[in-house]
Amino acid sequence: MADTGGFQDDDFWSEFYEFLFPPERFSQAEELLAASPLLSFPPGARVLDLCCGPGVFTVPLARLGHRTTGVDRSPAMLERARKLSAEAGVQPEYVQADVREYTAPGAFDTVLNMFTSFGYFEDPADNARALRTMHDCLRPGGSLLLDVAGKELLARRVVPPKVVRRGGDLLVQTDGVLDDWARLRSDWVLVRGERVTRASLVWFVYSALELRAMVQAAGFERVEVFGGFDGRPYDEAADRLIVRAYRPR
Image 1 (tube, rainbow, N blue to C red):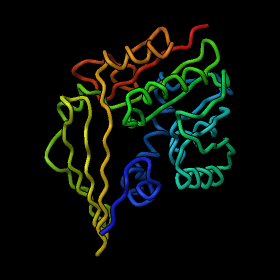
Image 2: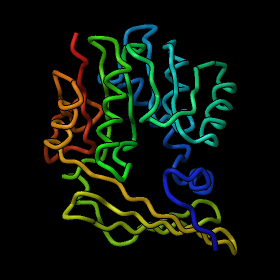
Image 3: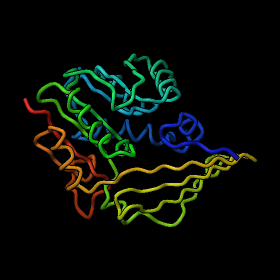
């Protein structure tokens, strides 16, 4: 039996890769970039994909002609991203860095943070610091697109253990609420042959109201909230919590 230490542990991303980044996640990114009004950028836009993982959005953005930079703290994920980029015939820039430490003042037209890659630091001040990074990397007037699973959505989705099979591998995921709905804990058990790997993730979850306030406190203005990549309202029909905001000019 093996244990991994969650999102800061490179072994976690490697061990659970097939479940975190199945082929349909990559195809979904392609579809969203082709159809979503929230992901339509001017030709040649400078785009920062913060917490880019294996380049799910970084690679197709580069294929669309955008000047794209992917930042992630995981060497294993960046290695996969570079391989996928080479296979696609594009050369986005990749940087290994902690989101709290990365600096590129005013260098980007747009910052993306996708697929609930926000809220994982134990200290709330570090999550706020990550938002400041997003703000400071934008040119004046540049936009942020922050995509998470909102607290309102999670409240109706925290269910008994979920079982997922991929080939001969079996994943059992159990979610639980912590700290009066301030955080969630997700325990993962992966059975691969005779090998069993366990991992736990704990992250802060935000309502639309809470996330809007955090984004405004980080210095953004014109904060908009959407319930999906099609630009729908954040209401009972929402399937994501997406915030778009702008650095003041």
